[in-house]
Image 1: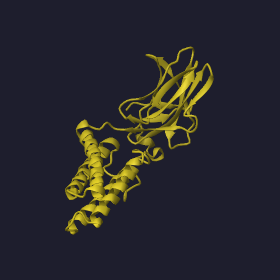
Image 2: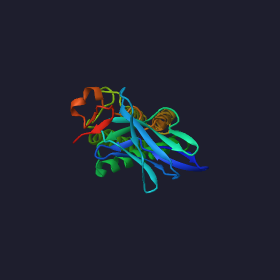
Image 3: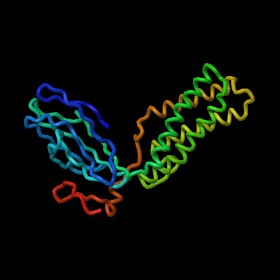
Image 4: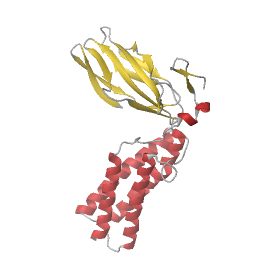
Length: 260
């Protein structure tokens, strides 16, 4: 979500705008309604295209100004921005540029939850392994193998299954594409495989070769986790998918939702 606030009548109103939506529902774009005649519009278009932006008036619903962006096919994206007319003047959200909203098919919780748990615990165990390698190198071989196991199940097994449910393809990273999420997962997995290889060839887990490999892998893992999750993720090429899209551009340049 993109978070921030705007001012109207001397009061700050927080907002959180969507960056991800599901293909089975329109995406609600919501900001707090300050009242006092404040009006808003959302301007949007398919991304990446050169289409004209389509205006979508916001309506006051239960204390919030709301507009519904039309659902897109899996990996389809809309770029949008919000314009509010307040007592202080015009407010643009964001102030510069646009927000990108990416759509995905719903992922069953039975797959998504274990994936998230494995990746999160894998991060924690990886950090614990690195701390052990740095300060108390006892049992780090077992911890390193545990980290690799969690990364394998969470990232290399469940990750592609989640990707298949969400975007229709098991793997869109190297060597088949440039999906950064897949490539990040691959890099993390490879460095921990490297640690496992080093540890399997060293008799003493406490020597600095073993410990150094763990510390290097942990640094790579932390660097990977600092990269935004959906940066350069799967992206629908609208120019090559016109015949199968669930939306089309109307005669006026607006986007009309068709039967799906």
